Amino acid sequence: MRSIRWLVALVAILAMAVVGCGGGDDEGDATAASGETTASTEAPRCNGEQIRFQLSFFPNAQHTGYLVADQRGFFDDAGVRVKVIPGGPTVNPSLQLAQGNVDMAMMDFSEGINAVVNGAEIVWVAQTYQSDPLRYVSLRSHWPLPDVSALRGAVVGTQQVGELEPELRGMLEQAGLTIDDVRMKSIDPSIDTLLNRRVDVFPLQSFFHIAQLQEAGLRMPGDVDVLDPNELGVGVAANGVAVHRAFYEENKDAVACFLTAALRGWQTAVDDPRGVQPDVERAQEAGLASPEATAINIQQTLDLVTRKTDGSPAELLELDMDYLEQSMRRLLDARVIEEEVDLSEMVDPEPLDRARAAAGA
Image (cartoon, rainbow, N blue to C red; front, side):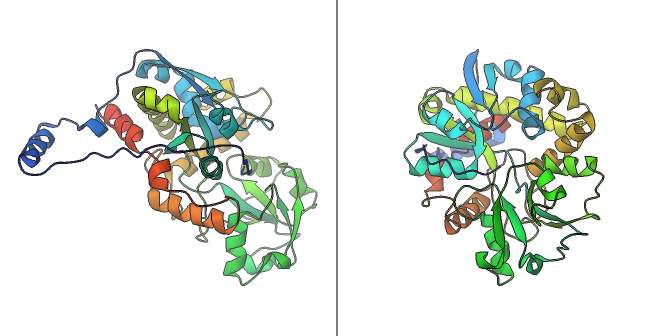
């Protein structure tokens, strides 16, 4: 879930492969023809480097690929020793990273931008979710929500600290509505808030709440109406992976090796969602979710990591700069972030490129 954390951030340098001219072109053509990689895409080599990796929350299905990589020894196979550190309601991943308490962290994209704005030294190296997990849902029997215009007069739950969620703002604008046309109510993340009708419209996180609705005996869609920001063209980039810049500069191979193992973990989950469920269940706190709910949460998470906002396929951990730029503008309009940053400096695709080179070796 998105929360504003005004405590951190800075800048990483975008690595670019510079190709010379003249005789250099011939050499480059020869390299490409021979199948050799350039410096920027050279497969990493690691030998037991240690990485402290902060999760965005308690271990659960939303971290599936990283948990699989840890549980199955993929990090060890890639040559890095990774300590996976649980998060929680009182843990701020961006602050942990900025203070150097961890080396890498899974965090929300808005947190990463605010971190950079406020001077913390981080590098954005992967985008875990390729589409927005947020949905706005209502009980059809209580507050039908056939389209965005039906939000008028609704009590809408929010877990946002400060300003309006950019997705809700975008939907309201599409319908010619404003914040004054809805009644906002601060809530906790429990789906009981919707079931007990304390709100008319609930901000659902697809990787967790859909399973809870089904366990409550509700069909989605059917018993529940849904407004999906992705389908409405107002989705915003969510969780990705950031690295402390000092660690990155000294351990570029280790970061790429981490992503090599992460890609393998996510691909394993995509290939066999049911097969990785025991990995997730071993990592998550007992009783956090039933086996049935965990299976649903894993599948919902995989939908987020493999599909773009328009429903087209996405590469695992893909850094879609157009998507990130568009998301940043929406976050700024909603005042979720303080100011824009130069994403060409914040985002560095080189570690992921090298990880893909290693995966293809």
